[in-house]
Length: 282
Image 1 (tube, rainbow, N blue to C red):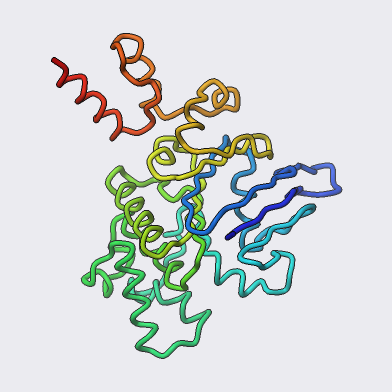
Image 2: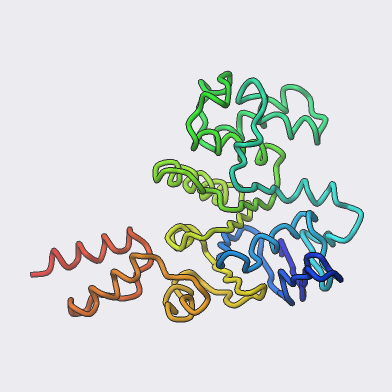
């Protein structure tokens, strides 16, 4: 197992008048190589939950074990080599003169590698994120928003984490930049078996990307299931301040007026497929 979370509780401003339980008694296991989406309304505890995975936050109760390492142990440096954490708008942390140097920064800080091995890893991470060789000598500040985002993520990937955690990775990106990013993440998961965990408020993105959905509500784990099963229960999601993908509402409407049209559609690709079937009916 990649991650075992057992009865995790985290409290902000503990033992003060501002005390707030952000995560309450959460137990969940994430297996190696999964693509997991964590969704929930603002303040549901989803970001607090993932910050425990590389020891940024410590449990007030319970236990978090990542690849056999308890996050309360002294092996925090080893843990952070395993878990790559990408926060919202990571491109705000770009600062080097070139794309190459920005990707290289974390690698050279954490590892002492021969120059040729380091160069190979830097160029591989860039390629994995769809960054061309021509971009490597450019200033990162000359790039588009989507390219900057991918440079920042490549700077995490270059250290070789077995688990990649991304908090709202598509925030502020246009549809093209979003699609390119998800293609890269899916390919990394497929080829390297990297466990990818994404915190998102976008139901559409998670329906198309994740193998598994964790729904956080008021600090507790409310659902742990497949995207199809999660988004079938529209009324439950709405009771937690969430919604199904917009295409699901469209499918429900079409199912009422087109005989045999499926109401359990959660991705645009599936909607196009089903509409084409209707168009081709005799």
